[in-house]
Length: 159
Image 1 (cartoon, rainbow, N blue to C red):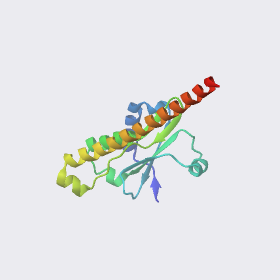
Image 2 (cartoon, rainbow, N blue to C red; image 1 turned 30 degrees about the vertical axis):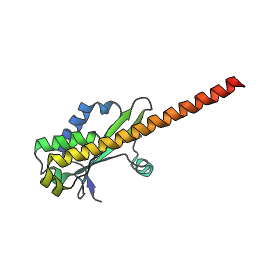
Image 3 (spheres, rainbow, N blue to C red; image 1 turned 90 degrees about the vertical axis):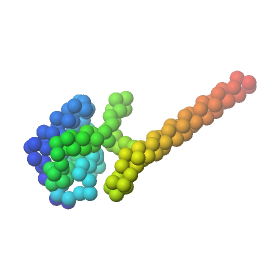
Image 4 (cartoon, rainbow, N blue to C red; image 1 turned 120 degrees about the horizontal axis):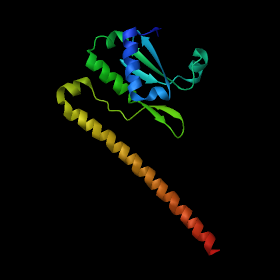
């Protein structure tokens, strides 16, 4: 994969929007241009080998930008895509940990053209349903754990 530095204009745009998130207080951003990709913007954390070879700190987030495609967008679209890419980044203050990933919706371009907002809304509701199920399972697991702990404490008192 051929990589290169982004143009100064694009670097400034990413850096300005990154500062707006406040994440610059917790992590570093590395921008890398790529000559070919299936996505215009890809956010990730470098693996251990990349950190070692590239002498990267633990608090770095890398963003790959298919700059040829990115430059064909209007300014509003560029900003929206960058802001949405930053939505993939999460920082946990308590654990001092950076996480990449968020619930995603996936629809086809043809489906979007055919059904528009109805399709987008349906996909979004589906993601919300999955999150709700996961939360319910987590709560049930915690309740079961608390019930077992209470039973164990009751048995100790009865002995």
